[in-house]
Length: 512
Image (tube, rainbow, N blue to C red; front, side, top):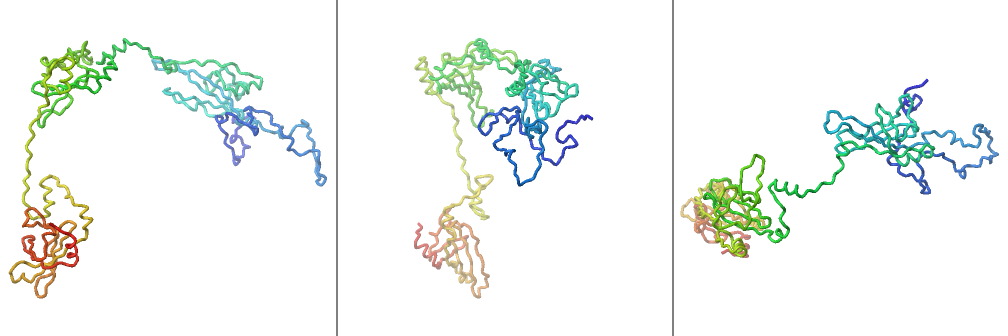
């Protein structure tokens, strides 16, 4: 009873699924196989012999062991390993490779009617399976890669394809497509030569219109057409290299006026191009576009052409055409020359014997700086912090002397003081004035006095205070002298004494 299932592992009932099916090595990696003697081994199947030097002598019989030998009645003298070696083992990892193509029609296309698609046919000798791949071509517009996965293919008469069915120069019918085999690789030709079935010579693969279009064609050089296109695009012949090297970065500068507006003309001697820039002033009421005319060659005559057609003049402006009395004209607008810079004056005087007066851009008189009136401090908050609202709408954080803060951090000068007054209730009151050297701030603390009726605690918060005797200056350590008076926040204090740290600090530091 015949079955339609292919005789592959996993398709037959007698196959044990628990057995390990080793992965087959790709045929692409099998380029050359060498033996232990570094000799190239042919990739097609050959009868495998047995080295008899490593086999025991069958004539020697061990007398201590009782056994019975049964003679091999079939093929006397042939090894049993050769008789029962399967074909899959002999032909494992041996693949025949053919190159073919088929014609595919292209519908609804005005460019081409058909397309030639090249494929590669792989025939695996171990199980007679076939795999077809299509090499990838850039911008082909069709899916490429694996064209037919590996499987056993059958001919129209329901028999699998054999190696005798793959012939160069004949068609191969697979899945309704006729694939023309036009060549094969050297290994395949050697394999068929050993079988006494040589393959035919390679044929040429036809080319379609797409493949023909992919071949780069050498450009036809037409100097007249190139010059015409350059002039059509508004250019011209490329200036000579000598003119560019001699006049590179040399620019003639003209100060001109047109309709009471100031402009600056730049004439580039390297390529005879012109650039016009507009001069702007603060609050002049015009849009601040600096470039009035981009750098280009300026034609002598000007005419309005059709939409989309660019005018190309027969003659362009050169430095020889510039006259002081005639002025300059750019696309119908006239510009009066008011003057030039020093380099332009020397250039025209030396080369053309023409005199141009020196001039410059008319600069407006700068406005008088507005003096900011700083209002007096109202007493709320820090004066330095409040001063930020005078100069800026969004005030910035006051900057401190970072090095002074790090060097004098936690350094405090302490003085004992009393009110400089004759009021009986305030005569016996005592205060501790602390001066912080890190940021020149002052705080006053009032200790408790017996039977004074006044609670001890902070008397004046810590911040900077101005010295009324020195206008606009803050109190510094030089203003705090023992036996002297100091006025803080409207109250006069008489300094009585200081602590030991303050005495040592004042002895080593002098203040003017």
